[in-house]
Length: 146
Picture (cartoon, rainbow, N blue to C red):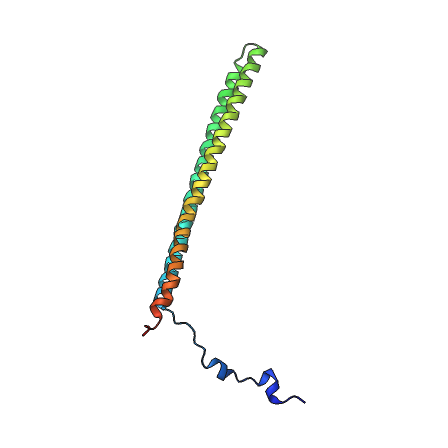
């Protein structure tokens, strides 16, 4: 037969936890850190919105340019006097269109990369600062050692 001492349910938790202390924290530093976190998130969000707006404007401008170029190309092709001249013009225009598409794709990619980099910058900076503050939160609240 088991004695009351042998069961884990008879453990006196107050004796065990009586000596346990939670580390002391500087609450003001913690609150200020959270405010800075929100500021960093806000800056990142603002950067994302600005990047999306630039990308959208670029796409609208590109569609307008493509439409204008298509109309000019159509006039140029239809003005050809012979089928051979038409084929030559079509080939030249297709090559030009392909090169322009590559250039526009590169420009759009650069816009997206810049937007991502700009949005990440305040978060990266804040993360590094937050790690430093985390350590300071406990140092400031710790009692002086004798």
